[in-house]
Length: 157
Image (tube, rainbow, N blue to C red):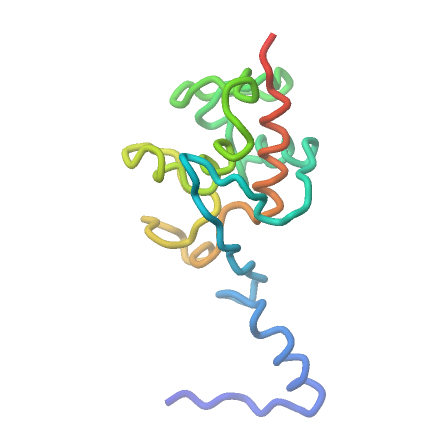
């Protein structure tokens, strides 16, 4: 059995407050929000807070977060190297609903079990996850809402 260091009177209350929020390696971990899939969509917001399209665009192009450009072409000409594996997203907001987009981001395998698109808001059933990312979703609930808000703005030409 491993011995734990003695916590001082000041550190103990702080540790009790922070412990539920700390994940592996001491990084803050968000508890996943429960959601319901209804007819191929997650109709309710994960946060109850409207998404910010500008923050969503930033997450979508961020190479360490959403990284949508790795697989999808998007109407973002200032960003290089758009992918061709997934569908072009230039008009996705004109043919998928908010709830349909949310489900695709949260866990696209619920729609297509063979897809190579990762679930951006799940921590179970993943393969080959680096230790520092285990138990953490790729996107937070609010980042999912932000990306959904951004994708809804993409209506094509």
